[in-house]
Image (cartoon, rainbow, N blue to C red; front, side, top):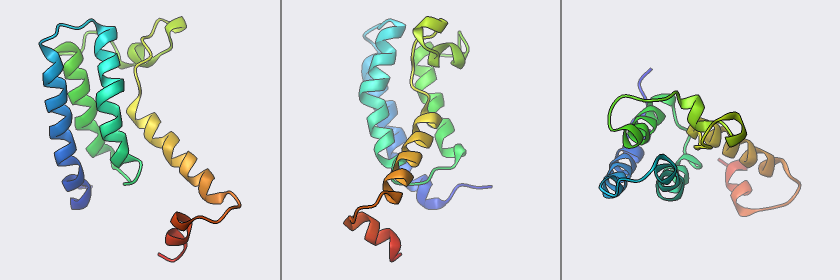
Length: 128
């Protein structure tokens, strides 16, 4: 199934911006911990701002994840993604898992929608 044109258009620019941001950090020869911190600080917020509002198919998320991991390894992956996203006590590096973050934000948004208070953003959803 092809992604919606709107999702492609919304994320084409953000993907370009993420790549540009990561290229600025490549020459610094950061450690893996440093690279993870760069992704958490500069890349994740840019992506998650739009991802929190727009529903994304996995085909849109895949290039973002690919861009991030190519920043880590400059080529083929050296360790499994699970090793990066696991907690320190499990031998991981606590890298953010993009799909999990998106799913979590959707659940939080749904929970806030079902809470018993009146808000303008809820009214927009009710009348759409």
